[in-house]
Length: 356
Image (cartoon, rainbow, N blue to C red; front, side, top):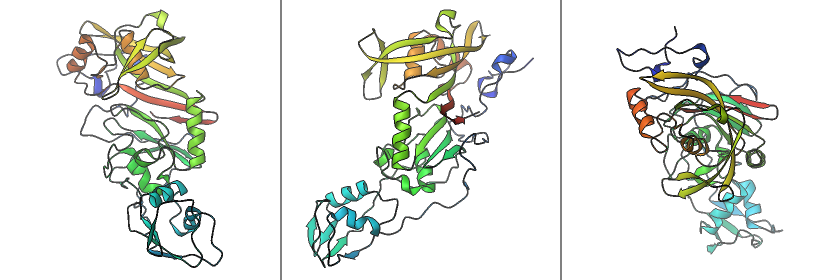
């Protein structure tokens, strides 16, 4: 007899046992909002993880004055590029110039493409180059890394990236403390280097890229469906065999943008998605069946797994947004406080990233 993992164990005197097929649940699943700890992980790709105890990088101060040579460059931003820290991209310099932070011989300039006059003096105001805050107060295990990218093990209740400037405590804040050159990569700003997002309540594999070309490659691979993405979930009900082991195609539409809500629409009326469900096992809890599923998605639409499972009447336990009366009751009974959705494995070519 094997007991449920701790996060699914109900209060005494009710005791539940599961068959061996269900006991292989990710140990990193946590339902405590106060705990950000996660099990140790090993990299399956990309070499040795960096030292997680190192102090955050201290960005070099921007130069106050720069003198233009006799033979002036064609572009202001290109000329200033070697005079700023290496992680400050040309795009970031362009934004800085447009914001009015640069003067030539005392005159304000706002055109990154202008040619500075010979022998002129360029003054750069002491402004913050990034809305990001470096924060390594919490250490997040590195699952794998490669040239220009890193994958972390995201705990539940931690955001992938900050929503407002100056906010800390997210995975991106931690990555920024290790790789300051991530600033302004990809989408830039508060989402710099974010290859993909996981919802706050979701745990598992989260990938970041701190090189622009690498970010482009990863992002293209995601959008083209070249990255195999696998998740594990626990849902209400016993899943019908007709919904298992083959691609399920549904059109999804965002029906509410603020506090986003997604819904399945008739074919041809939304964004086409592909989801495949594989049954790991089932168990009855207080007369109600629950199922453990492995889920693979070929597309990556907002809330795809959560909304599709809800549409199939198999809401994820702990998911308050895409819930049924039964899933809410089960979550309360089992003291589940977040969606039991975990990103277990991403694979792109020879790169395989796994979260236990």
